[in-house]
Length: 131
Length: 211
Image (tube, rainbow over all chains, first blue to last red; front, side):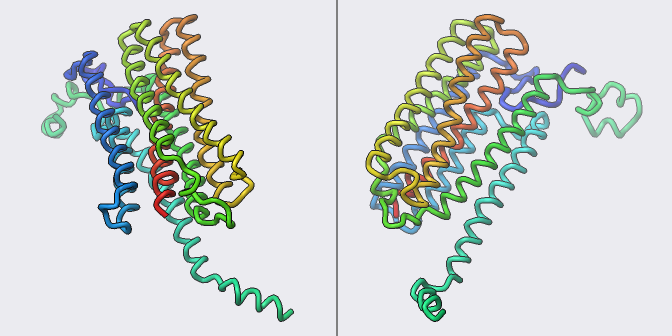
């Protein structure tokens, strides 16, 4: 009982004693992940090229598909779970996702705002002519 | 089990100690966690390149746009190569776990070949673009494109070198605990690269063709 470690290295499959670490079940997890990732990738390419969908929603749809595929990779390839042996890994991952979201969304917001407030090129030209 | 701990003192001694009471974690957990932190910081670096690309995606300076340059079928093959290599990398870590040497070498070889195919396609794409006069110096859009995509390509190159070195280590040292830890870090690295590529083909190639 006491030799059960509560922590798990990131990327390791579960080492809990009640879980059978058989070869076939491990390969099954990777294969399910591969099938899901292939389906999501194919959907992404279809969504980008089809004319059936409303054009304005395609970017959002692609983002959702990418997030879903990231989830598939994390769960089936990197074995990230919500179990107690994985808390440290998930907390670090959550912090990383927070920083990534701040950098990307923050940059896009600030640059879009700057573009909106920028003087149009023609007016800028007139201003320079006056000097 | 945790509820029983509060009831009386006798059960407390038999209850499973918490993670902090078990003493220091094993080296595999410490090494894996440290590498996990490195990967997250690497992804934060990628996010800065992604942000730069997203801001500059329309700054073509009269030059060619993404819709004119990107070849979707080539991107689809690159994606398939990288995804399949991620799968075989997973099979390799399973073979390592059950100490099957032949399966380890085979999975590593397939992973290496698929990664090399990805890299060859990317280099062909880059040389084609540069030959068309759409090199990184043409516009802000192309500068950020080449920075972002070649940074990922550079990571894949480093991964291939790392994989070759690891196979040499398996051949010389066998699957010792040290080599096994390094292989764990490699598989984390390789899967993380695939996650970065998911965002790359979505944001750069598929969204770039839309506009």
